[in-house]
Length: 101
Image 1 (cartoon, rainbow, N blue to C red):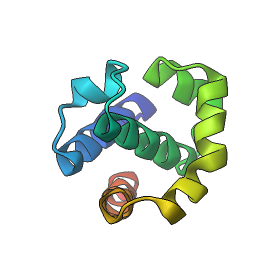
Image 2 (cartoon, rainbow, N blue to C red):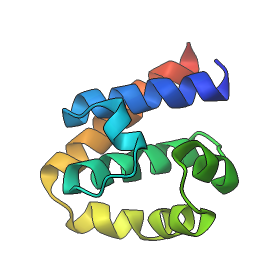
Image 3 (tube, rainbow, N blue to C red):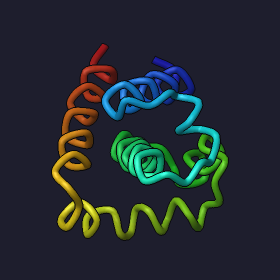
């Protein structure tokens, strides 16, 4: 699967799990749900081997923002609500299935 295809499918998965549209994740809105979804996408892309610069380009963010997300993600996961954790864990499983196909 090409990286762009994987990215688009991952955004769709996270959007569905978060009860959002893919467009809302990509458009830069700052509601709590959208920010959580965007953070999950960033983390999973990094886990799948994407470089920070590529993640920033795909999500139209700065590399500094991506680096910040990756730096504090685990802390946010540790103190975040259970829905954030659930969506992240479920998205990781589904994303792993994508890379296997």
